[in-house]
Amino acid sequence: MVDNASRRGAADLAMPLMVMAFLVIGGFMYWLMGQASEYRELQVLTEDSIASAEEAVTATTVAVVDLQTDPTPFEEQTIRVAGLAILSPFGEQGFWLELPNQNPFLVSMSEEVLAEGLVLSQGLGATPTGVLHAMNDSARAAWAAAGTISEGDQLAAEFATHFLEATQVVVASGDGGGNAPGAGN
Image (cartoon, rainbow, N blue to C red; front, side, top):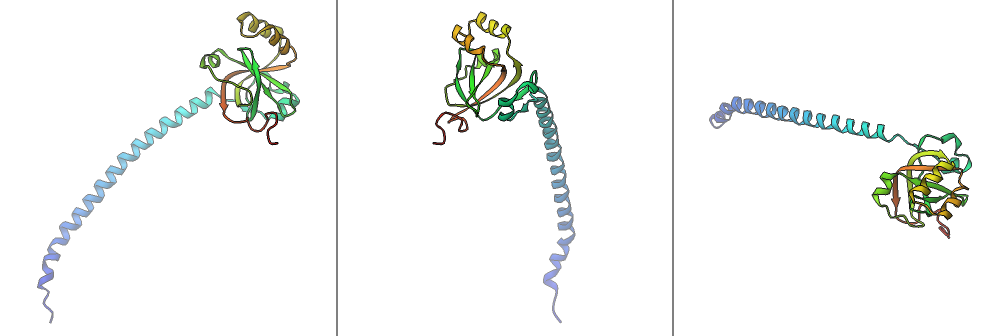
């Protein structure tokens, strides 16, 4: 018969090792529960901040074709126009975007955007977000009274039927999505 005397020590440690394994697993599960609650609190805070940011800026992204065809349905709505190149400045007040049909579209910057001191040069891509308004004499007169547009800009603004009062402008480097003159040639 085989002598099992060498295995007696292992049998005596089985119960303490099993209890210690359960305690380690229990401690690990408790630690995971604490980590999960911290993560859950962080996730709730993040979701709340995202929801409040989305409520603050609920802009409809408008297709450029809709804007160049007839912007009237979007009057007095907060819209976003993406993928257009800056055609030229509009005094210190704003800039003209170049639509795909080569027509300009006026963007007037709000005081907050003007305070940011954006560098806007011809050919850069811009994504303005703001309220679309029908052009009127009082808007042109207010810009002229503020000294942000010249007399020549006033005359140019008379040809605009609508303008976007931008509350946010994101300027991208490059050629503005290929709408700049000579792009893609």
